[in-house]
Length: 120
Image (cartoon, rainbow, N blue to C red; front, side, top):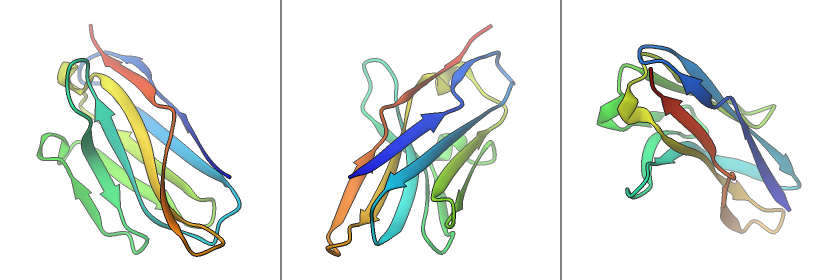
């Protein structure tokens, strides 16, 4: 079994910062791509940022220059530093990780989601 636990969300004023963290636990062979998605009310879930095992990154155009994704391959964590937050960043944020099981099967695991609200 693989579990993802997210932390760091909350309420912040426009222009403020938050840091989301996601920790992976359980039994697995290795971890491949990691990322953060978000879903606002009435909207589809969208990719915010992704990072490969080799630390190649990609970002949604709307967050480039404001958000930074990072990972720790020893601790099996992925973080999202969010700066200059805007009200339109308000959403439930989901951690997503591609895990290689002990059987060598690749699966996609999702966190439970964490609320980020940007409002004055």
